[in-house]
Length: 347
Image (cartoon, rainbow, N blue to C red):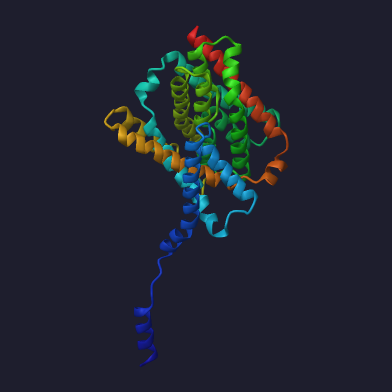
């Protein structure tokens, strides 16, 4: 057989490899690890109702990263989990929001929500500037503390592509200060003379994570839980316009994400708004909504585990005390705006 014929035969019989298929296979270990951790976090949250699955997932990721370390084979997949699963989880989160329920809060409470998010972000950015903290780091802290905690930090990070160190610091601070607010928000409401309904509004308006709001609402008791969660979800809805403004600002500044100009409204935010619109039609049965709620928790928990894997204690030590001071002052600012707003809206 001639060399040319042999080469032709070899090329016909040699197995072909698909680069895209190889890349997907490389992601599987990390994605599987993140989903496994999310399942474990969900089980823990069911056994210990006071524990958020998202919080447990972050702690699991942080514990793994700072002890044995993330397996090398899983690193690529966990990075993808921290971005794509997060965005998918935020889209599904929209199915928990109904425009009718939000409007039912009344113009006064909606104004409180808008004020908390707007003044919280602008005030935190200003305080952070006075403290000499870099813009990207204080932006992540501002959005996480004013909107919806770690999910907001990660969503903003997906638009601006901040340093991993900045995102990890903001998430760690959200976990710490949001947890502290679980007993402090009900106590603050009692000290200023709020009734049960007003304390529920305050909890939803001042605490960082949805799960932390649930815990505080349970402490207050009565109808406070449902009111607190509804106000908190209204703050979650503010994620869409905030991300749109940040995307517009990035485009105006000529910044790029992955070599491309960031969209004014990212696709996952458009999906989130579409999910809210779908839920608002009332066509989805309760069973579908229950499945969506579980799926949302699993997706966000997997993403939080992946983000927790990026939290390095040594890195946090190098940050110094200024981000901690900013987080404390941001918490006070958001709580103060929420308290004044609830008092004015319900007087």
